[in-house]
Image (cartoon, rainbow, N blue to C red):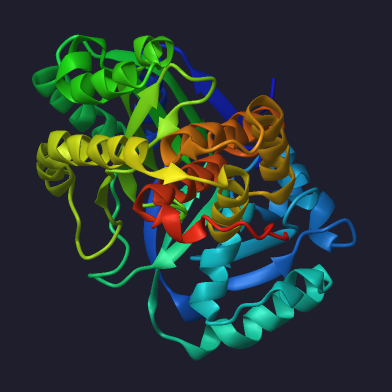
Length: 380
């Protein structure tokens, strides 16, 4: 079983109490510290580094395994306040931000050269960094000004959303949860609220001869957050019952900045019902949008939304094989596009990337589908 300090560690949850207990424990063992940026010092920790076998050079809480794992991954160590820690790959982007540098070429440098580059830039700034030490490594180095990054503990966010769901959507069911060092997300279904949230939409599908599809559908929500700057705190509308949950937008979002608080997140959840119904209404409107060239439309929209090309072309091929290029509704095509998510999931695309793809897919609901409906084949 992977160790929690490993950069590639991840864990799945099938019970909400287990997920909440995990994050309570993680929060209690995490340390957030404000440090002046020019006090940060970076060193190489790759296979050629003298630090590689000098385990005693690290903070007392750091094990040999955590050092070795960093050698195999980012290959850098960070010292501040007289203590040295391995640097997790999730901290790389935020550390570059503190040094005010960037670019893909940096990762092509030898680790000694990359460390030297960072050490030339970090001393130039007296800004404050908010450093997160978690599971033996520096996991993030956010901007630490009073109005910059706001700490929103995952365990408290989970308590908040559980309270809101139990109050507003009694009978809700926790389906699954996931955490790694980049992202945390969880999914709930709302079985007692099918008519309230999906009633009109399901009737529209039934009237269009899609009773089998309508009978499968269930409203749900997705919660996601990140302590490493990957994502704001989001709660989004889902439609369950398909091979992969269909993200339809309607996100209630709280950014980790501007002195945001758990209370603000709790208050934002009051918009959840309205956001959900608005998203379902946008989806339902697609049933009245008729397309003469649905394969071309599907190709053009996938390209515009920057969906993964290989998975998209596979899903487009499956749709064309099943339906040909006969006229169809935008709703038919949107549902077919959701196959892309199923393909990516089966290909073990990382969870953080899956969440980003879900959001991109949901943007399709805001597009003018008719403008893509042309006879000319779309090249990609």
